Image (cartoon, rainbow, N blue to C red; front, top):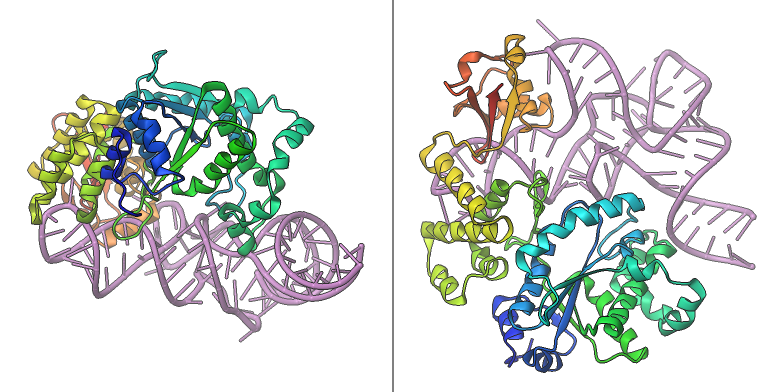
Length: 419
RNA sequence: GGGGGAAUGUCCCGAGCGGCAAAGGGGGCGGACUGUAAAUCCGCUGGCUAAGCCUUCGCAGGUUCGAGUCCUGCUUCCCCCA
């Protein structure tokens, strides 16, 4: 990227915070944003009941778009999810039922209001759903009005298609159409709501640029494309995956405590980068935190965890998670806010094996895994390493409040509660 | 339409003479060292209260004391020809 000095607040913020990977026309977009005339959208798939960290990143771009005096649009992919985006995937995902997509859509929507202000004002965010126009399209009309602008030769050279072909993986016609639909979305919203900017992850570049082209061919105003870098940790792993699966944004899928822990465990080399991307902390404060070295960098990680969690789940949830972490890791005392699973006194009386107890607590997936962990000294009951895989969980393990602490490794703790 | 290949431990890649719970990687998990970090080293990586039993190699049958391995049919993918 050549040195570019933005005049608009929007691009200045995105640039200094490290959001920008590729842009179709920085100068053009800059002058638009400087006048508060940028109307930008990000599309969200409804493939799961919750969004994940990558989506959090793009919604932060919408956040800054709004803060800098422009208008954000969140587009629910109610229509496009029925087709399925092949970008970055080796194989066709099973087609999702309409009911499932609807349920996911409803479950996803909530998080945006955490970082965006919706309403009718000029810079208020609006939410659209491409099912509203895509489902009404007529095949022949679509081919004549839109399809003729697409070159198959060029489509075959796009990453999302080419990589499949090179790896000799199948790509069905329905997926091949995905980029046409996404392009159409962009052009359609340009005409109906004046949209002129689409943002997304770097894997969306091909789809977005196709939309820019389509807009030009269909005679819309100038459209712009902007993507974020692919989120990776300093050691090169894809971000947002943990042993338990993805880092979800919905609290019922991934608790605020786990979310807080996720950030607390950031690698040293990533702390500053993540502070810029996932918090709204002023750059000056981030610069101060960046000065911390050695073990002190843990202070910066705590700030990161606090701010990111507060942004998504609220300040109270962030404080509770921080307090639980402090008690658990620094004092070694029992903190009530740890994940809790209840057991009945009957179960204990009947003789609940320790192995089964760890399975019940959701710490390990099977008793076999529990056995293995015991062998390598990974399981603890009330902070004492478990050595006997035949032991039972006795009433003596529970404290006066009827709580026993089960742990695996240093970081995973679950409370078993009687009652 | 014709011909030739391929599908393996449900995270991925990938070896596998009729004796196989199945080589080797990657990833992941645990331990040691640390700072709830990284790097490094070690161990583990089908299920079951487990010297035993049960279920796995695309699907369904068959041959055999015994099948991931041989035979038949089917499904899906790849390549060549038309």
